[in-house]
Amino acid sequence: MILLKLIRESFLFAYDALRQNKLRTMLSLLGVTIGIFTIIAVSSAVDTLRNNLQKSVDKLGSNSIYVEKWPWVGEDNFPWWKYMQRPVPKLRDFEQLSRRSQTAKALSYEIRVDNRTVKYQSNTVDGAQINAVSQDHDKTWNVNFQDGRYFTEIESRTGAPVTIIGADIADALFPGGTGVGKQIKIMGRKVTIIGVFAKEGKDMLGITSDNEILLPLNFAKNIIDIENEKYSPNIVVRGRDNLSDVEVESEVRGLMRSIHSIRPGAEDDFSLNKSTILTNQLDMVFKAINTGGFIIGLFSVLVGGFGIANIMFVSVKERTNIIGIQKSLGAKNYFIMLQFLIEAIALCLMGGLIGLFIVYLGTFAVKALADIQVILDSGNIIYGISISVIIGVLSGIIPAYFASKLDPVEAIRTN
Image (cartoon, rainbow, N blue to C red; front, side):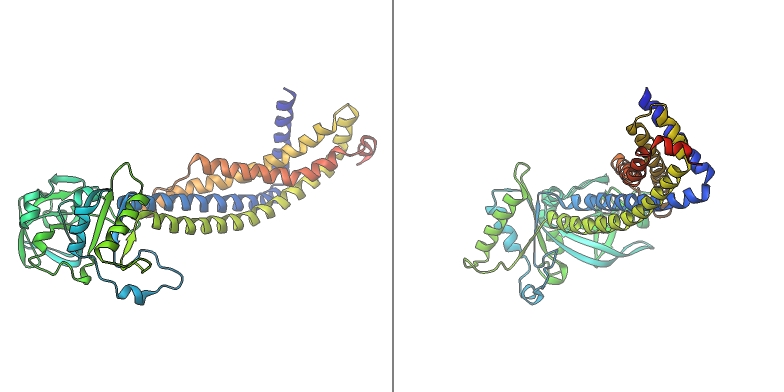
């Protein structure tokens, strides 16, 4: 009860200091407010970016290996001339991997044809992305439909003139209706729509099926050279659920070296990409941003802490007579010390809570302007409050110590 009473009185003293010296106290709190705002805003922004980017990376599959000519992430001294000489993955590579792999749950050979025009009667869509894929594409990627179905094995094997389109293309070509069963013209050929992907929206890596047109690989083979480098051919290997990406990658590397007859000790002539490469790079970037935001915010908080310490020294001087009376009535040193220490913490908490409130309001502003859901979770709130308490302790400990050591007789005589 005594401790609770002490805390209550200390908060009242802090409020009284704020009320009597509004400008001085607000200017001192400003540093704490700006510091907490900066630290928590940066932390929330990083969490939001990480969450959105992780959703994009998750689409790539945590257990999928991408066999490609180019690596996703370059080295410090990027040897682009070496990669230029590499061959692109061929159908033969895909067939050999499919036949020999023991760790793969599914494999697909895929190519991409960008910026094509699609027509249906008088409606036209420009800039569509056409992907031609082998049968198991729906097993290497997570595919969701709002209407229709995926290719049958017979359609894929015979190269049937069928297609699956994205939600945005369906809305543009067939406003207010379904496109399933209709025929559209792609690359000079008529194809029948058998499915429409569920709407996803573009993520932060630009991965989306909304503007995609999916064709059977054997159909595309009759129109274009599917092994041509300009179509970015790649092989996607999705590992079995009970295996790690490292085990799958190890087997794929060994098989590809065997298929390409690469001598022991010689460099690979292919790249094996996976989602962890991106997440590791993103973690490094986010760590740097977090550190920068923390340093900037820390300087602001420290400036605010010095301001709070100055207020506490003034408060000790103004209440010297009261301290003397309290000590003469039997108040212990720790009671006096706690009184001023809690007052300093209370002032810092006020500044911290104002900073957190501004961040909270900012989440609504970002949501309204950019339609991005900002993450301000309990961890960030506890983080901000903890820093406020720590700064309060650091800024109040010395004034509180001096107050507790005052001589009661001398303190009472002070005017």
